[in-house]
Every structure is written in structure tokens, then in C-alpha cells.
Length: 416
Length: 147
Image (cartoon, rainbow over all chains, first blue to last red; front, side, top):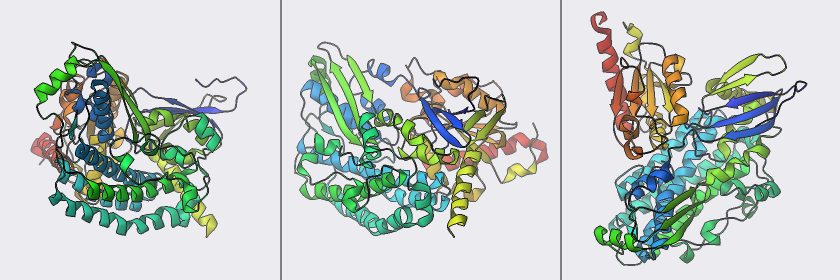
């Protein structure tokens, strides 16, 4: 908690649990001096549904749909980690074809997640046209995901030992069509988010996370790669088919930019990762081995095998937001999981809020809150309590958003 | 609870997340973006429950959110319709045996609350638009003789 004394002229702004940047319940307590933020204190827990507890009371295959519903944006990530952990614990190997299909789905999800984020970021700084543009182009990858899996979100494609749906050759033209669509549009996205001078004014040198802070706070994913930290599970500890693919760390200095760790670098990293994902999907489609998609199609046999298994396993993966881990333990003779522990990427990245918010203005709260691509709950109302006078002022999401839009306008007028 | 003519076109919607997995919430935003564009019907997402006619509700209501959910419900002026989007809002769905879940929402709201259910896990944007249409018809029915 933030300490306050009588002489202190700073005041607190609890933002939450309905947030300016996303639509989930979450809370951050800000300490302000005038317009400048001096401290930020995140309060998670509004979205706690006891998922690990529920998982420990169901059989391992019933937990797969539950694991997807940890988060609707990274549902693939969680089922992947969960099934990998259980496979690891029970000593079951997924087939090679399943590894490639998993990789394709993971990368498609990365494209959808990053494009979605770009739209949210544009909205936070007052460019709603770009929000609608990015969400319009996002529908194309959603269509492809639906075409492959049958669902727009929560794909239910994973199972222990493989996947439940194949990507046959007849699907390749549609995949290729979608990839080409994004390649053609990519330049436009880059022009908007990296080239536009008014967006640069709002993102350059805002919410800086230095390399030292990134390492100290153990941030993960694009949030720390933007600061120049070479950290990517796909390369550090390859899973699924990543070991066979050609990929490199996406950090700004690779593209002739500085590793500043501000909102601009984070945008850059995410956009470049879209291109990287397109390349990875192409490689997977080309190299996909001809094999079964599931190592144990009989689910009763599989369940029996899992009941007899004893051991612990870890599923580690590079989610769109960064590294995330599932831990699972199986006990012989017990059908349910003995232990299940999840650590999602946002949990690590939340701590990076403190240095990023420090010294910034209230109007920058929405974009900095959004820049780690938080995946928890949100808030819609902020209350400002001026401690020295005892007066309080409420900021709604709209007012915060208005402040943010006004800042863009002021900057534009100043620069014209 | 008589409605005025203004309800005929522009329904203002406040979106409230009580601990959902984010999937329905993203689909709600997708429903207002160009592909589906629910805003062409005059439907608008607003930033305050005090401006809203429809409460778009997602999630199984976690312990920490329960009080806030009820407060937002009270802050919304009458007449209002609660539109529960997604299976976990209407039945707690896949989270049925959790210690941290207080829902579903219909067990928490007052008996006279008007609740509409939009199913799906997550709901498709088309279904959300259909749900808002149903909310419309419902509000019109509430108006009764005024029509």
C-alpha cells in the first residue's frame, strides 16, 4: 500500500475495477503530484475464479475446456501449456504433425492478439479510426481460425497427445490467402503506427522501461523485448515445432531503431512479430509431416493411462504477451490432477507498471496501462482524493479518455 | 415503468465484466467494429451506467466483484434491461463448482429485474446484435399502451 503523511501534497487515484484500457476488472492505485504520477500500485484479484481449484476436481481431459477459459484472447496458449504439462507428467509424446498444427494455431493467435492490441492502443490515444481499421483486418484471421477449428474463440482443438482437428492440404490455399492479405496490409499498419507523426508524439518516450528495470522486474514478452532484452521461449527453450523453424528475437535494434522500451518500441515489436508469425506459419505449412494428429485417439484408454501415471510436468510457452507457465502433477490411482499451477505473462508484466508510470501524466495512464497488453480485469471509474484538502473528484473512463484525446490535440496544435 | 419514444431507436449500452474470460468482451467490441457494426442501429457503448438503458453483462460474478455489480445495477436508471452475454453469466457455465464464484447474476439481482440471455461460449457477434434486438422488443413491450 502507498503510505501518506499529513504534509504530503500528493493524492491517490484508485483506478478500478473497471479500467480505461480494457474491459476486465482490475485495479491500480496511483499516487499523483499535480498531473504527474509518482507511484503506481496494482491490485489484482477481481477476476479470480478459482480455476486451479476447479481443475483439481475434474479429470485431466475435462480440464482442457476449462483451461481455455482462463483467458478468451489467449485460449490457445493456455490449452497448449496445460496439455504440454500433462503430457510431460504422464510421459506421453504428441505426434509430429500435431506439433506443427499447434504451432500454426499459436502463431495465428499471435497475429490476432497483436492486431487487436494495436487497435486498443490507437483507441487509448484517441484514434478511433485506427481502432476500427485494425479490428476490421483482424476479422480476417478470425475467419481463418473459425475455418480451421470451427470456433471464433475458444477453439477446443487440443487434447493430451495431439490435436482434435487436422489441417489438411485443402486448407492451405485459404491459409495462404490470409497470410498474403496481412502481408499486403502490413505496410499500411506500419505507416500508421510507426510513421504517423501524431501517434509518434503520444508514444515516443512515454512509459519508458529501461533494460535494467526490465531485467530486475522479470518482465516478459514484447514488453521487455522492446527494451532490448533477448528473451523468447520459442528460441530459448523450443516447444511444439519451433525447434525446426527459423526465427530470431524481435528487438527494435534489429530494425534500426533504439531499444528505448517506450510505448513506441513496444508497438514496433508487436507489429514486427506479426510479420514473423506470418513467416513461421508459412514454414510450418511447407514442412508439415504426414502423420496421425493424435497419438491416442481412444479417450477412455488415454484417461486410464493418465490415471495410472505419476509425475510432474511443466508447460512453458511464449504467449502473445510473453512467457507463461503451467505446472501439473499427476498421482497414481487418482483421476483428478494432484496439483495445477498457472502463471500467466501479465502477472510478471504488472510489476513493470511502476517504473513506466513514474513521472508520466494522468493523460498517459490509458496508453501506458494498455502498452503491456494486460490480460486481467478492467475498470471504468477512477476516484481522485485530494488528501491535503479532503476533496474528492471522480474520473470516469470517458473523462480519462477525453484527457488522453485532448493531450493528442494539444500536441498536434503545438507541432503545427 | 413507462418508456418514452426515445427508446425506439438509440439503445445505450453499458458493458460490465464481472470476471469473465474476456472472450465475450472481445466479441462485444467486435460487434461494434466495421464487420458487424451494431452502431448503425443506434446502439452505443457508453462509459457510465448512469447513461445506459441496457446493462451488457458478462462473467460468472466473482466474490470481489459482487458488490460492485450490484452497485452498477442500482446506478442504472429505470427502465433497464440486463443482457447476460455468454453461458457463464447465465449459468456460471464451466465455472460451476468454484468457491470464488457467487453468480449466476439472476440469483443476485432483485426479482423484478428484466434479464435477457444471449448464449454461446463465447457468444458470436451476430448473436449479440440479435440479443440487443430482443432487448429492444422487450423494452417496447414494457411501454405497453404508450405505443
